[in-house]
Image (cartoon, rainbow, N blue to C red; front, side):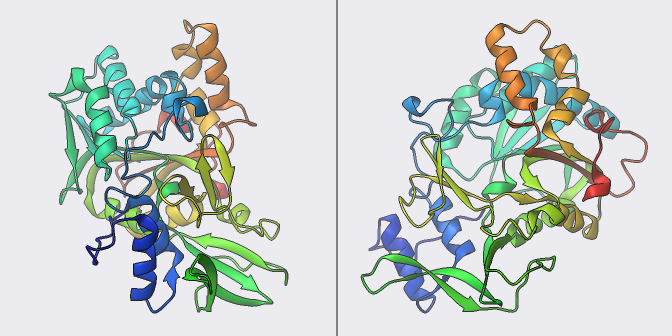
Length: 373
Protein backbone atom coordinates (compact mmCIF):
# COMPACT_ATOMS: atom_id res chain seq x y z
CA UNK A 1 0.00 0.00 0.00
CA UNK A 2 2.78 2.42 -0.90
CA UNK A 3 1.91 5.29 -3.28
CA UNK A 4 3.71 5.09 -6.59
CA UNK A 5 5.77 8.19 -7.32
CA UNK A 6 5.37 9.67 -10.75
CA UNK A 7 8.73 9.79 -12.47
CA UNK A 8 7.51 11.71 -15.53
CA UNK A 9 5.90 15.02 -14.47
CA UNK A 10 4.55 15.56 -17.98
CA UNK A 11 2.10 12.66 -17.50
CA UNK A 12 -0.89 13.66 -15.39
CA UNK A 13 -3.61 11.08 -16.08
CA UNK A 14 -3.82 7.56 -14.71
CA UNK A 15 -3.82 5.67 -18.05
CA UNK A 16 -0.82 7.71 -19.16
CA UNK A 17 1.00 7.01 -15.91
CA UNK A 18 0.43 3.29 -16.29
CA UNK A 19 1.62 3.37 -19.92
CA UNK A 20 4.70 5.23 -18.73
CA UNK A 21 5.42 2.56 -16.12
CA UNK A 22 4.88 -0.20 -18.68
CA UNK A 23 7.50 1.42 -20.89
CA UNK A 24 9.83 1.85 -17.92
CA UNK A 25 9.50 -1.89 -17.17
CA UNK A 26 10.37 -3.02 -20.68
CA UNK A 27 6.83 -3.31 -22.00
CA UNK A 28 5.41 -5.52 -19.24
CA UNK A 29 4.15 -4.44 -15.81
CA UNK A 30 3.57 -7.03 -13.05
CA UNK A 31 -0.04 -6.96 -11.92
CA UNK A 32 0.78 -6.06 -8.32
CA UNK A 33 2.58 -2.96 -9.58
CA UNK A 34 -0.37 -2.11 -11.84
CA UNK A 35 -2.81 -2.59 -8.96
CA UNK A 36 -0.76 -0.34 -6.67
CA UNK A 37 -0.83 2.47 -9.25
CA UNK A 38 -4.53 2.03 -10.06
CA UNK A 39 -5.51 2.18 -6.39
CA UNK A 40 -2.93 4.43 -4.73
CA UNK A 41 -1.30 6.79 -7.26
CA UNK A 42 -1.42 10.14 -5.38
CA UNK A 43 -4.46 12.18 -6.36
CA UNK A 44 -5.53 9.82 -9.14
CA UNK A 45 -5.72 6.23 -7.89
CA UNK A 46 -9.04 4.91 -6.69
CA UNK A 47 -8.29 5.30 -2.99
CA UNK A 48 -6.35 8.51 -3.50
CA UNK A 49 -8.92 10.52 -5.46
CA UNK A 50 -11.97 12.42 -4.22
CA UNK A 51 -14.78 10.29 -5.67
CA UNK A 52 -17.25 8.73 -3.25
CA UNK A 53 -16.56 5.10 -2.36
CA UNK A 54 -18.47 3.98 0.72
CA UNK A 55 -22.25 3.97 0.95
CA UNK A 56 -25.31 1.78 0.88
CA UNK A 57 -26.78 2.72 -2.51
CA UNK A 58 -25.45 3.53 -5.96
CA UNK A 59 -27.59 6.68 -6.08
CA UNK A 60 -25.46 8.23 -3.35
CA UNK A 61 -22.44 7.94 -5.68
CA UNK A 62 -20.85 5.10 -3.75
CA UNK A 63 -19.39 1.84 -5.03
CA UNK A 64 -19.72 -0.57 -2.10
CA UNK A 65 -20.73 -0.80 1.53
CA UNK A 66 -18.61 -2.00 4.45
CA UNK A 67 -19.93 -3.35 7.75
CA UNK A 68 -19.52 -0.13 9.79
CA UNK A 69 -21.28 1.83 7.03
CA UNK A 70 -24.08 -0.74 7.09
CA UNK A 71 -24.90 -0.37 10.78
CA UNK A 72 -23.25 1.06 13.93
CA UNK A 73 -24.04 -2.27 15.62
CA UNK A 74 -20.88 -3.60 13.96
CA UNK A 75 -18.47 -1.21 15.63
CA UNK A 76 -20.37 -1.23 18.92
CA UNK A 77 -20.01 -5.01 19.07
CA UNK A 78 -16.38 -5.03 17.94
CA UNK A 79 -15.68 -2.52 20.72
CA UNK A 80 -16.47 -5.23 23.29
CA UNK A 81 -13.64 -7.31 21.88
CA UNK A 82 -11.38 -4.27 21.76
CA UNK A 83 -12.18 -3.48 25.40
CA UNK A 84 -11.23 -7.00 26.48
CA UNK A 85 -7.98 -6.89 24.49
CA UNK A 86 -7.03 -3.48 25.89
CA UNK A 87 -7.63 -4.68 29.44
CA UNK A 88 -5.76 -7.96 28.91
CA UNK A 89 -2.73 -6.21 27.42
CA UNK A 90 -2.76 -3.19 29.74
CA UNK A 91 -2.89 -0.73 26.84
CA UNK A 92 -5.08 2.27 26.02
CA UNK A 93 -4.63 2.95 22.29
CA UNK A 94 -6.20 1.65 19.09
CA UNK A 95 -4.51 1.71 15.69
CA UNK A 96 -6.80 1.37 12.68
CA UNK A 97 -5.53 0.75 9.15
CA UNK A 98 -7.61 1.94 6.20
CA UNK A 99 -10.32 3.71 8.22
CA UNK A 100 -12.63 4.58 5.31
CA UNK A 101 -14.99 7.39 6.28
CA UNK A 102 -14.11 7.06 9.96
CA UNK A 103 -17.38 5.29 10.76
CA UNK A 104 -15.74 2.37 12.55
CA UNK A 105 -13.46 4.66 14.54
CA UNK A 106 -16.46 6.69 15.71
CA UNK A 107 -18.39 3.59 16.72
CA UNK A 108 -15.47 2.08 18.63
CA UNK A 109 -14.49 5.31 20.42
CA UNK A 110 -18.03 6.05 21.58
CA UNK A 111 -18.78 2.44 22.53
CA UNK A 112 -15.61 2.24 24.62
CA UNK A 113 -16.63 5.46 26.37
CA UNK A 114 -20.03 3.92 27.12
CA UNK A 115 -18.32 0.79 28.47
CA UNK A 116 -16.31 2.93 30.88
CA UNK A 117 -13.03 2.18 29.14
CA UNK A 118 -12.16 5.37 27.24
CA UNK A 119 -9.17 5.42 24.94
CA UNK A 120 -6.19 7.68 25.40
CA UNK A 121 -5.62 7.81 21.66
CA UNK A 122 -7.06 6.43 18.43
CA UNK A 123 -4.52 6.47 15.60
CA UNK A 124 -5.47 6.03 11.95
CA UNK A 125 -3.06 4.94 9.23
CA UNK A 126 -4.54 5.84 5.84
CA UNK A 127 -2.80 6.74 2.60
CA UNK A 128 -5.75 8.64 1.13
CA UNK A 129 -5.77 12.40 1.68
CA UNK A 130 -9.43 12.67 0.63
CA UNK A 131 -10.47 9.94 3.04
CA UNK A 132 -8.49 11.58 5.83
CA UNK A 133 -10.59 14.70 5.35
CA UNK A 134 -13.79 12.66 5.62
CA UNK A 135 -12.41 10.97 8.73
CA UNK A 136 -11.63 14.33 10.32
CA UNK A 137 -15.20 15.47 9.66
CA UNK A 138 -16.69 12.26 11.06
CA UNK A 139 -14.48 12.30 14.15
CA UNK A 140 -14.56 16.04 14.88
CA UNK A 141 -16.15 15.55 18.29
CA UNK A 142 -13.19 13.41 19.35
CA UNK A 143 -10.43 15.43 17.70
CA UNK A 144 -8.32 15.57 20.85
CA UNK A 145 -7.95 11.76 20.87
CA UNK A 146 -7.72 10.99 17.14
CA UNK A 147 -4.39 11.15 15.34
CA UNK A 148 -3.16 10.22 11.87
CA UNK A 149 0.10 8.51 11.04
CA UNK A 150 1.83 7.79 7.74
CA UNK A 151 3.72 4.81 9.12
CA UNK A 152 4.04 2.63 12.18
CA UNK A 153 6.36 3.69 15.00
CA UNK A 154 9.33 1.52 15.91
CA UNK A 155 7.31 -0.04 18.73
CA UNK A 156 3.56 -0.29 19.04
CA UNK A 157 1.39 -0.93 22.09
CA UNK A 158 -2.37 -1.29 21.73
CA UNK A 159 -5.07 -2.95 19.69
CA UNK A 160 -4.78 -2.96 15.91
CA UNK A 161 -7.90 -3.03 13.73
CA UNK A 162 -8.07 -3.68 10.00
CA UNK A 163 -11.51 -4.01 8.43
CA UNK A 164 -11.32 -4.79 4.70
CA UNK A 165 -7.68 -3.75 4.50
CA UNK A 166 -5.90 -6.93 3.40
CA UNK A 167 -8.17 -7.36 0.36
CA UNK A 168 -7.04 -3.99 -1.01
CA UNK A 169 -3.33 -4.82 -0.91
CA UNK A 170 -1.82 -5.48 -4.34
CA UNK A 171 -1.57 -9.13 -5.37
CA UNK A 172 0.48 -11.03 -7.92
CA UNK A 173 -1.46 -12.97 -10.54
CA UNK A 174 -0.45 -16.48 -11.58
CA UNK A 175 -1.92 -18.26 -14.58
CA UNK A 176 -1.52 -21.91 -15.52
CA UNK A 177 -2.02 -22.09 -19.27
CA UNK A 178 -1.56 -25.33 -21.15
CA UNK A 179 -0.04 -26.86 -18.03
CA UNK A 180 2.66 -24.16 -17.69
CA UNK A 181 2.67 -21.53 -14.94
CA UNK A 182 3.06 -17.86 -15.88
CA UNK A 183 2.91 -14.57 -14.05
CA UNK A 184 0.17 -12.40 -15.50
CA UNK A 185 0.93 -8.74 -16.03
CA UNK A 186 -0.17 -5.77 -18.09
CA UNK A 187 1.17 -4.66 -21.47
CA UNK A 188 -0.04 -2.67 -24.48
CA UNK A 189 -1.66 -4.32 -27.48
CA UNK A 190 -1.10 -3.32 -31.11
CA UNK A 191 -3.62 -0.50 -30.76
CA UNK A 192 -1.96 0.85 -27.61
CA UNK A 193 -4.68 -0.37 -25.27
CA UNK A 194 -3.99 -2.09 -21.96
CA UNK A 195 -3.99 -5.87 -22.31
CA UNK A 196 -3.07 -8.96 -20.32
CA UNK A 197 0.33 -10.49 -21.00
CA UNK A 198 1.87 -13.59 -19.43
CA UNK A 199 5.51 -14.35 -18.70
CA UNK A 200 7.09 -17.60 -17.55
CA UNK A 201 7.78 -17.66 -13.82
CA UNK A 202 9.19 -19.82 -11.05
CA UNK A 203 6.46 -18.56 -8.70
CA UNK A 204 3.74 -21.01 -7.67
CA UNK A 205 0.68 -21.01 -5.46
CA UNK A 206 1.45 -22.30 -1.96
CA UNK A 207 -0.57 -25.45 -2.71
CA UNK A 208 -0.37 -27.60 -5.80
CA UNK A 209 -3.57 -27.20 -7.78
CA UNK A 210 -4.81 -30.57 -8.98
CA UNK A 211 -5.75 -31.01 -12.61
CA UNK A 212 -4.41 -29.93 -15.96
CA UNK A 213 -7.04 -27.29 -16.72
CA UNK A 214 -6.17 -23.63 -17.17
CA UNK A 215 -6.19 -21.86 -13.83
CA UNK A 216 -5.81 -18.25 -12.65
CA UNK A 217 -5.16 -17.30 -9.03
CA UNK A 218 -3.43 -14.81 -6.76
CA UNK A 219 -0.57 -14.84 -4.28
CA UNK A 220 -0.26 -12.22 -1.55
CA UNK A 221 3.30 -11.10 -0.79
CA UNK A 222 2.26 -7.57 0.21
CA UNK A 223 -0.43 -8.70 2.63
CA UNK A 224 2.00 -11.14 4.22
CA UNK A 225 4.69 -8.45 4.36
CA UNK A 226 2.24 -6.16 6.15
CA UNK A 227 1.69 -8.82 8.82
CA UNK A 228 5.44 -9.30 9.22
CA UNK A 229 5.89 -5.56 9.69
CA UNK A 230 3.12 -5.59 12.26
CA UNK A 231 4.87 -8.44 14.07
CA UNK A 232 8.10 -6.45 14.13
CA UNK A 233 6.44 -3.44 15.77
CA UNK A 234 3.66 -4.82 18.00
CA UNK A 235 5.20 -5.30 21.43
CA UNK A 236 2.05 -5.45 23.53
CA UNK A 237 -1.58 -5.79 22.49
CA UNK A 238 -3.44 -7.66 19.76
CA UNK A 239 -4.53 -7.27 16.14
CA UNK A 240 -7.96 -8.10 14.71
CA UNK A 241 -8.18 -8.32 10.92
CA UNK A 242 -11.60 -8.71 9.32
CA UNK A 243 -12.00 -9.45 5.63
CA UNK A 244 -13.49 -11.73 3.03
CA UNK A 245 -11.48 -14.80 2.19
CA UNK A 246 -10.77 -18.46 2.78
CA UNK A 247 -8.26 -20.84 4.28
CA UNK A 248 -5.64 -22.06 1.81
CA UNK A 249 -7.32 -25.34 0.87
CA UNK A 250 -10.46 -23.49 -0.20
CA UNK A 251 -8.60 -20.59 -1.80
CA UNK A 252 -6.63 -22.84 -4.16
CA UNK A 253 -9.40 -25.36 -4.77
CA UNK A 254 -9.18 -26.82 -8.29
CA UNK A 255 -12.67 -25.52 -9.08
CA UNK A 256 -11.74 -21.91 -8.24
CA UNK A 257 -10.17 -21.67 -11.68
CA UNK A 258 -10.82 -17.96 -12.28
CA UNK A 259 -9.29 -16.76 -9.02
CA UNK A 260 -10.90 -14.16 -6.77
CA UNK A 261 -9.86 -10.85 -8.36
CA UNK A 262 -12.88 -8.57 -8.67
CA UNK A 263 -13.76 -4.90 -9.15
CA UNK A 264 -16.54 -2.85 -7.56
CA UNK A 265 -18.27 0.20 -8.99
CA UNK A 266 -21.73 1.60 -8.22
CA UNK A 267 -22.56 -1.53 -6.19
CA UNK A 268 -21.91 -3.78 -9.16
CA UNK A 269 -19.00 -6.11 -9.67
CA UNK A 270 -16.95 -6.94 -12.75
CA UNK A 271 -13.76 -8.82 -13.54
CA UNK A 272 -11.94 -6.25 -15.70
CA UNK A 273 -9.40 -4.23 -13.70
CA UNK A 274 -7.88 -2.80 -16.91
CA UNK A 275 -10.88 -0.57 -17.60
CA UNK A 276 -12.18 2.59 -15.89
CA UNK A 277 -8.88 3.20 -14.12
CA UNK A 278 -9.23 5.07 -10.84
CA UNK A 279 -13.02 4.81 -10.97
CA UNK A 280 -13.50 1.43 -9.33
CA UNK A 281 -12.10 -0.70 -6.57
CA UNK A 282 -9.82 -3.64 -7.38
CA UNK A 283 -9.69 -6.35 -4.77
CA UNK A 284 -8.85 -9.98 -4.11
CA UNK A 285 -9.99 -12.33 -1.36
CA UNK A 286 -7.60 -13.08 1.49
CA UNK A 287 -5.70 -16.35 1.93
CA UNK A 288 -5.99 -16.51 5.72
CA UNK A 289 -3.65 -19.48 5.95
CA UNK A 290 -0.91 -17.38 4.35
CA UNK A 291 -1.62 -14.55 6.79
CA UNK A 292 -1.48 -16.92 9.76
CA UNK A 293 1.77 -18.53 8.63
CA UNK A 294 3.42 -15.18 7.95
CA UNK A 295 2.34 -14.01 11.40
CA UNK A 296 3.68 -17.10 13.15
CA UNK A 297 6.97 -17.02 11.25
CA UNK A 298 7.42 -13.39 12.31
CA UNK A 299 6.72 -13.95 16.00
CA UNK A 300 2.97 -13.58 16.44
CA UNK A 301 0.54 -16.13 17.84
CA UNK A 302 -2.82 -16.77 16.21
CA UNK A 303 -5.35 -16.22 18.99
CA UNK A 304 -8.33 -17.25 16.88
CA UNK A 305 -9.91 -17.48 13.47
CA UNK A 306 -13.61 -17.76 12.69
CA UNK A 307 -16.43 -16.37 10.57
CA UNK A 308 -17.58 -12.80 11.07
CA UNK A 309 -21.06 -14.01 12.00
CA UNK A 310 -19.78 -16.28 14.75
CA UNK A 311 -17.30 -13.64 15.97
CA UNK A 312 -19.95 -10.93 16.35
CA UNK A 313 -22.42 -13.24 18.08
CA UNK A 314 -19.69 -14.35 20.47
CA UNK A 315 -18.94 -10.68 21.21
CA UNK A 316 -22.55 -10.02 22.21
CA UNK A 317 -24.14 -8.63 19.04
CA UNK A 318 -27.59 -9.77 20.14
CA UNK A 319 -27.23 -7.92 23.44
CA UNK A 320 -25.97 -4.80 21.69
CA UNK A 321 -28.93 -4.93 19.29
CA UNK A 322 -31.66 -5.61 21.82
CA UNK A 323 -32.99 -2.05 21.59
CA UNK A 324 -32.31 -1.59 17.87
CA UNK A 325 -35.14 -0.59 15.55
CA UNK A 326 -36.48 -2.71 12.72
CA UNK A 327 -34.10 -1.28 10.15
CA UNK A 328 -31.04 -1.84 12.32
CA UNK A 329 -32.13 -5.38 13.03
CA UNK A 330 -32.40 -5.98 9.28
CA UNK A 331 -28.88 -4.64 8.81
CA UNK A 332 -27.67 -6.84 11.66
CA UNK A 333 -28.90 -9.88 9.76
CA UNK A 334 -26.64 -8.91 6.86
CA UNK A 335 -23.65 -8.95 9.22
CA UNK A 336 -24.24 -12.52 10.40
CA UNK A 337 -26.31 -14.43 7.85
CA UNK A 338 -24.34 -17.06 5.93
CA UNK A 339 -25.63 -15.88 2.55
CA UNK A 340 -24.67 -12.25 3.34
CA UNK A 341 -21.45 -11.21 5.14
CA UNK A 342 -21.59 -13.69 7.99
CA UNK A 343 -19.75 -16.59 6.36
CA UNK A 344 -17.69 -15.08 3.54
CA UNK A 345 -16.08 -12.60 5.95
CA UNK A 346 -13.62 -13.99 8.47
CA UNK A 347 -11.81 -12.64 11.52
CA UNK A 348 -8.27 -13.51 12.57
CA UNK A 349 -6.67 -12.34 15.82
CA UNK A 350 -2.91 -12.07 16.35
CA UNK A 351 -0.76 -11.18 19.34
CA UNK A 352 2.95 -11.16 20.23
CA UNK A 353 4.08 -14.71 20.92
CA UNK A 354 3.38 -15.86 24.46
CA UNK A 355 1.26 -12.86 25.45
CA UNK A 356 -2.15 -14.30 24.64
CA UNK A 357 -1.96 -17.44 26.79
CA UNK A 358 -3.70 -15.80 29.76
CA UNK A 359 -6.86 -14.74 27.96
CA UNK A 360 -9.30 -16.07 25.37
CA UNK A 361 -10.68 -13.41 23.05
CA UNK A 362 -14.46 -13.12 23.31
CA UNK A 363 -14.92 -13.47 19.57
CA UNK A 364 -13.54 -17.00 19.50
CA UNK A 365 -15.19 -18.43 22.61
CA UNK A 366 -17.24 -20.76 20.38
CA UNK A 367 -16.76 -21.87 16.78
CA UNK A 368 -13.02 -21.20 16.51
CA UNK A 369 -11.66 -22.50 13.19
CA UNK A 370 -7.94 -22.07 13.72
CA UNK A 371 -7.48 -25.81 13.14
CA UNK A 372 -8.81 -25.35 9.59
CA UNK A 373 -6.20 -22.83 8.50
